[in-house]
Every structure is written in structure tokens, then in C-alpha cells.
Length: 259
Image 1 (cartoon, rainbow, N blue to C red):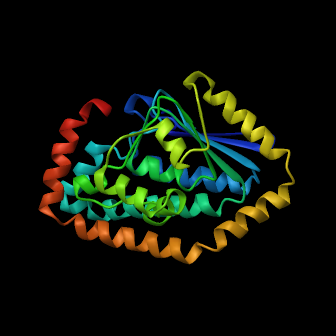
Image 2 (cartoon, rainbow, N blue to C red):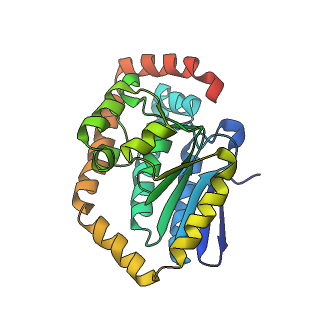
């Protein structure tokens, strides 16, 4: 059986790859658990830099919609649904706690929880075919991965609210102008730019890199924890709503081509 997430290490650079191209790299519980595992392994291996990307044309379309809808419909799967929500938050903690510099390589669709995962990365490089969207509010959900704190911190409160409230599509150039991504390149050049950036980072003083990340992150730890806890509580409450089930069913049917 093929691994849903791949991890490899070349000298001081780790590479973590979501490997579900046939599903547009959609996220289910198994994928989240594996991501948590490999990010922790990468930290243990003392990777100075980590490239976080995916196989296929899309970074990820976010939650596996059919899987998520199934969790909502079956009462007996409530424990799994809660574990799924908590796993997103555990992944965020693992990424933020990683002492190395994490670079996201974004391409194609980058939706919902997948986009929110990239907010825990230190740098984001996007191919010019990238399309970002946060559809949660329109479905009847809230965002996860401490994005309710991280996104306003990165692009400002006004723009963050616009993206979350309206759920409109954002292209790579727009994301660059907002400061949401650090660089835009051609899709065929994404891997090369990621490697060049990673190689540049590992040439820096390693202890200074770790200390800089630590100093930046430790000032926001309490805010992030509050956001992570609040997001889970809100999603559990919203998950009991009949309106969410109806909206999610409609969204699943509308976006079935992405799955």
C-alpha cells in the first residue's frame, strides 16, 4: 500500500510530501496522523530546513469531503470526527514547534485546511497556477490550524476577515501582493526554487536560525493555544447543526470534480 505522506532527508534538508494525487491530495484522518508523525520525525532528525509540498498538480483541496460528510452523518463516528479535528491542531503544534525552517511549496488548488496548514510554515512559495480558498464559513464551519490567529497576523485583520467571510478564490499574484506568499514562480520551476531556497537557508548559522524562529514563535504561543482550543470547541458545536449537514452535502456535490 502506497504511503499517503512521504518523508526523505538529504543531508540537512528534509522533504515532506502529501502523496494522494489521485484524490487531489485531500486530507483524511490517516493523512493527518502521518503528517504529524513525519514532522515529528523531521524535528528529531534535526532537519535545518524542511520542504513541504505534494505530488500531482494540486497542493491539496483540503478535507476529503466525502470522508468528512460521512463522519457527520454517522453518530457512532463522533469520536473519530473529534480525533480528526484535534489532529489538525496537533499537526499545527508540531509544525510550529519544529526547530527548522519550513518552506511550503504551493501549487494548483490550496483549499481550506490545507491552506491553513501552510500558515504554520515559515515561508511560502507558490506556483503561478495556485488558487487559494477558505470556504469553511460558507459551509457552516470555522477554520482550523490556528488560522483565526495566524492569517490576520500575516496579512492583517481586514483582509483575513475578507478571505474567511467571503470565501473567494485568491490567485498567486494576489497572495503575493498581500504578503501571504514570499515568491511566485512557474509550476515547472517550483521544485527548483524550493531547493535553491532551502540550500540558501542551510548555509546560514544553524543555531541563529533556530533561535530566531524560537524568539518569533514564543511571543505568540499563548494566543495560538487559545485559537487552537477555541476552533475545536466551535467546530464540535457547529457539527451538531442540521444546517452544516445540508450545506456540506451541497458543497460535496458541487465540488465532486476536485475529489
